[in-house]
Image (cartoon, rainbow, N blue to C red; front, top):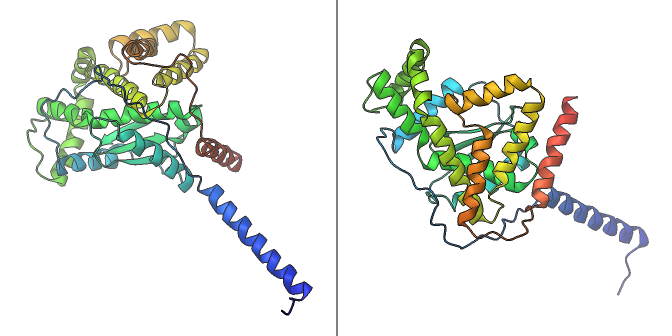
Length: 312
């Protein structure tokens, strides 16, 4: 058999090496994420939706979500990093399987906001900020944040709240079209600004604080069933609270906590953390809990750091 010339052999070897390196780089850019091992224990104390009057069902839920996004979220941009977006979506969709509505379709969007935040507009739309991704230290904490918003959505907290507020402030009893829902939502925002007593009444009654605690409980059990440390959300809340406490005057901080307890939309962090740790009494947790770390989480963190260096 005729031998290849030395130059041809070297060229072929170089091309094969280049191809293998290209494949390795492509695999590194799309790190496969593996979920933790789920728990199959029964969770008898997991919260269930309470129901209530809700005029935003089916298409109407989409109309309301669109109205909220167009009027309230126009200043948010979407983070242009597909690897981060795919990773957050993978974690989120896995958590959905352990929620009260596992068949519902969800979308997860990473915003460019540097403030640690996460929210839902209903209709399966979950938003998490770049600042929140920078704040979380483990995938368990990220799972807790996403599971909290999934619970808000699955329990229809936004549609129930807007239904109640529209009925009392604008007299709206039905959702008939996208255009009508948008008009009524804009009118509602105007009425809430003009009638501050209505907002104060809502806060005194504590509807929003109850929903936050309910979403925390839902997040605990979703995270638990999915195989994460279910109290990781409390750990995140406590760490964030410490940074806020360090950045404010002591008396100012105490007044802020009192306001949160009486009139805030979110309960004080101490109350939320205590409630989350209390739920640990009703599940079987291993004595030693190790945070769930994956190469995909580390890659997400590295990409965020790279974006920070690009800004500078």
